Image (cartoon, rainbow, N blue to C red):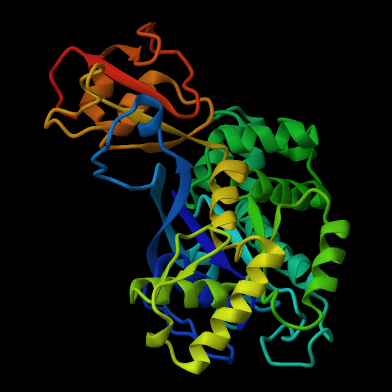
Length: 403
């Protein structure tokens, strides 16, 4: 899964990215610090199945710490977006092009209102973060609508004379470069009750379709960043009232980054997503570090976490509707071909069937699929069986693919 980190300049995108991945990303208090996109690996937290089965696992594609499995996802931190980006303003064309393959977007918003639309510093509370939400969504909607309008007359003629499939097929091909599937097109048309005849669509229909397609195909989570600054809490409370259907998570990216780096240097014990940390030896800390950790601790006591891990988890499991599935080769010992216990866990979308899951593991495993076995119940699962979260399964295939 690829998750894009988006927002206006200087909202804290690169700090969020660095806090989530510990990958190097240039950060600075001025606009357009990020020019080239930063790529890195972050992790979502799930409850591992190892303790349920009473085993000590040997993770290969993830990490297990005290019964918590950290599963990798890819993050992409792109250049800041300013109004008019869809027309090429700022780094708009590059920003939008970088987002083509993203499955979901985390919109990092300066909830303190201390930066304007251009990312320039202003008095805290003087800029309305709600306007940031509106303008970014409008930019992506206009981007989608411009793609849709290209050769629109030819699309109308093609569909009307029945030369090349229906409108859903044609639009799927048109948006294929944006990782948009036919089901997204069909769902958007169904929601708006649009005719299958594009000749009946007016300008308003096109704009509504673009907006709906964006919501369906690239859901957006709002990371209400800079929650540690003045005016932030008031703005956050207002946003959750105004945007009732949005997922909005209060975030303190700088605090998370400080904790992650301190843990990396073994100054503290801290796991991402936890509500507390433990200082290992305060004699190793400077007075400045002690003061910073004290401030972060007070923040955690109030908000429960820095919000970074929660944002990642809610993006994957709430917005993208993913589930976790553990494949094994030996259902009795829960091992792969090499004897590793519960080595892998895969994130797949809700509704994934056993055969589709087999393809996720290996194309030949999908081609030669016979059936699967539920490790818990020992029941056979047919190719159309829909998997559930935290399922542990063995795939039976005609040829011996080693897991």
